[in-house]
Length: 483
RNA sequence: GUCCCCAUCGUCUAGUCUGGCCUAGGACACUAGAUUUUCAAUCUAGCGACACGGGUUCGAAUCCCGUUGGGGGCGCCA
Image (cartoon, rainbow, N blue to C red; front, side, top):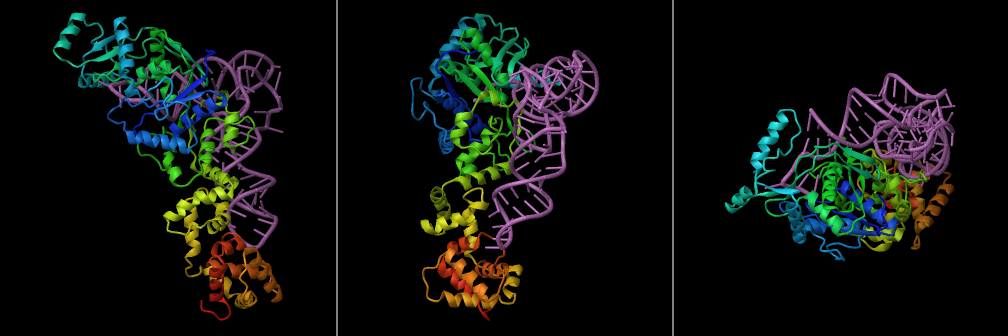
């Protein structure tokens, strides 16, 4: 169902909690799609659940999206020609359409209570059937409706579901068909006057002239209901695209409830992952580049994104692969950028943040980290020199080790211009003078400097430590020094 | 239970629409080797999959049917 209207996509979260990776992926696909085609992206807040929606959650949502580099053209914060963009601020619109449906006989008042409905549902399930509204109030005479209203009995407005099969075209799945009578009459307006999701969603997508609805597969059966509403209201339907879900390691839907570690976007921000890395990883969950490449910049993602390459089967969120990809992005990032991103993490850990030192640390550790929160951990390990590990102690006991360190110290003399590269030269020359092999000179030096036998390149380590600290540690083990 | 969706290495996937180029390609992880002063990074190699059963066809991972398995929905949540 292509049309020539200008392309408008939307992301419509409910502000009921933190943004989780599934929602983030949906937002990302919409963003990628809109930006790829030069269309408009709308951010709509679906806050009709007053119990659970909060303003702080909404603010957090925007923060998370912005951190990911997902921007929108119309939304609650920036307005737009089809606002307002919070559903609770559009109630008159829903009421109006609901009234139209009631007037045409396509909707009716229902006085059943929650408790009554729940009992019926349980009975239907027990009887081995599908739980659904049984039509109790479907054909109440107008006078009876009036009478109950006058008595002050609470009511909801239900959609009179027509008894006919429904089908729609899905951009990633093809034709989807539902037989007649697969759903019962569903609620349009609650007793408190607020619309339900399936109603508000249709009214708004139409009012906001949305042309493409890209959302999770969990909405497939909602789309059935929504299409019914589109049809009876004679609204033009958008193109639907249902993206498969992201599953947890237990293969079940990644729920908003407290789940496994790493299911919320803010966790990645807090850990100092590069947003482009998360974006890259999420994009590859259910989509792939035609080139087969996997480590992709945001620009390439945007240039190559294509709904036709979105996969139908669900994907499990593989934290291990995300960590690898995050590391790739760290290695590809400009050092200056990493320095400023690392500074807050160092400051929070009470560590120095002067740019030159931070740069030395970045250079030393960037090959082995996935996120910036790992920097202070590594720096602390480096700065806090404890007892040498057994292997390091052994390296310091090798014949010539202490003599070497002493010679280095002696040749170092009063020079103050020593950096990592110069230190390496000094080491090598001293070793040569004593007839030592590469390993015999580097291992004792490493052991003296860090108390360990593994770690980054020695010159990088030297610069990370600073000449003064390095020399101090060297002298500790030079000649007959204590252990 | 019922409706809908899905089904390729442990995981993400290419290939499926437009059957043959697929004795199924890549990536993560894992294993081994190379390289390096060590670790990491990097490079090379190895391991490893078309869920099953029927069709259709000269030929099927690709099309059809069934089975099984997995997921999602079935709310005055979204």
